[in-house]
Image (cartoon, rainbow over all chains, first blue to last red):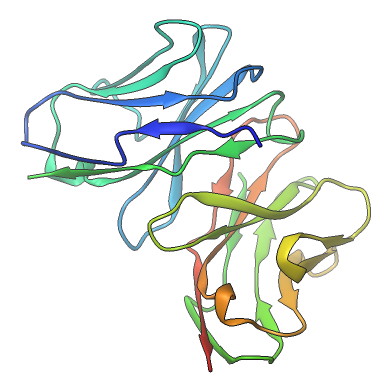
Length: 115
Length: 113
């Protein structure tokens, strides 16, 4: 069964450093998303991406965050200058259609620890 | 705005007992509703979803949920709990025009042998 692949599974970075989280969405999907889950809290929407541009973003997704689809297979989330409060599990997702359709698939997540 | 409320952050049931995890939604129009399960150190796995077809939705692993518009609820049930059901369960909502999910705070299910 097709999967959304995220690498690395766990990343530790120093405060102030840039970090890039990588995702390989399912190949025929058109919509791409990032969510985060701070430990013990709910999963929160960050951003959606369609047709090579951001289609929707939340208040969390400020200027420190950016997304990119650098080639035909990867979808990345960059945090420019990490803060302690960026420590969370980050989930990538992709879908062939919008959320109402079938096939919306989450990856297994990258646990980011900022020290 | 869309939102979901999950009543009970922790639920414990005995093995073989009924599982009932509660979810209420807030939406101005009938939404799409989902239940996801998260096992320790793993990602989110779709259990089932309601997209305006049958109000009783059957999912994987013997789970089902019933959409009740009058109660704005979408509670998750399973007749007989198994040890392998121990996990975190998230209810989520999406409106029909948007492309993002709004998740509840999650319910941690413990199954007692």
